[in-house]
Length: 319
Image 1 (spheres, rainbow, N blue to C red):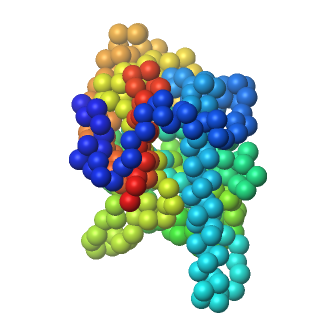
Image 2: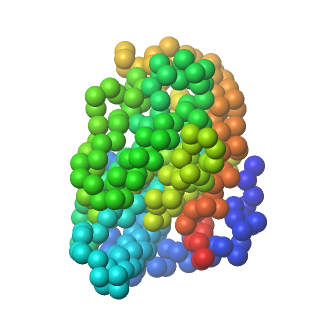
C-alpha cells in the first residue's frame, strides 16, 4: 500500500496543495471546454466530469503555460547572449507516468485538448510509448511476452532517438503506432510529429532515470522532458480499477474478432475477475512496485487520486 503522503520521504522537494486550495486557483484561468468535450475524452472506467476539470485541470493548464513561457524566455535569452541565429522554439515536452488503470490516457487527452485552446500553444501532439514496445514476435523470441510494460520490453534506443529528434527541432518525426486490439505494434503505421508547440508523452515508465552500461544509452527519455507528471493512487484502488476495466472490456475490445484477448470475451464474471486479479498480481503489481512507483519523486508534479478517481491532493516540485 502507498503512504497517504506519496512524497513523505522527499517532502522538502514538493509543495503540497489540498484539493480545496488547488481548486481555488481555478477562478484565475479560463475554462475553454464543454461537458461534451469531456465526455469524448474520458477513458473506459475512468469517470471525469466538468467539475473535476474545473477544479484540477483548469489551474494545471494555466501553470503549464507559465512553464512554457519560462522555457521560451530562457531560449530567447540564451540566443541573445550567445549571439546565436534565430530558430523556432523547440517543442515543450510533458511526460505523463503512472500505473496501469490509473487514468493516464484520460489525463493526457484532457491536457492535450485544454492546452490547445490556449492562444500561445495551439498545436499539441500526443504519443504513447506503447508504440515503442518491441513487436510481439521479438518479445516472444526473447521470452519477454509476459513482461510487456516492463522497461526491458521497450526499444529504448528508438524511443530516445525519437525524443532527441523532436527536441532538436526536426520536421516530420515518426512515432510507431500500437493497437490495443491486436496487442501489437502496427506495421507501417506512424504518428507524424511536426513542430508542435507541446508534445505529450504518455507511458508507464517514462520518468525512469538513465541506465548505465554497455550498449545502453547514457540518457533517459525523461531527460527530454520540460515537465513530468505522475498520476498516483493507492494500490488497492488501482487493482479494483483494473479489474473493473477488464470486466468492461469483455463487451468492447475483447469481443472484437481481431482481439488478441478474444478468448476472454466469453468468460463468466467470476472467471473474468479471477483472471484480472491474477494478471494484476503477477504482472502489473510487480511492475508498479519495481519500476513505476520508484520514479514518482522524479516528477515535477504528482496528482494523487482518491478511491473514486477524484484528485485529492496535488504535489508540485519546488526545487
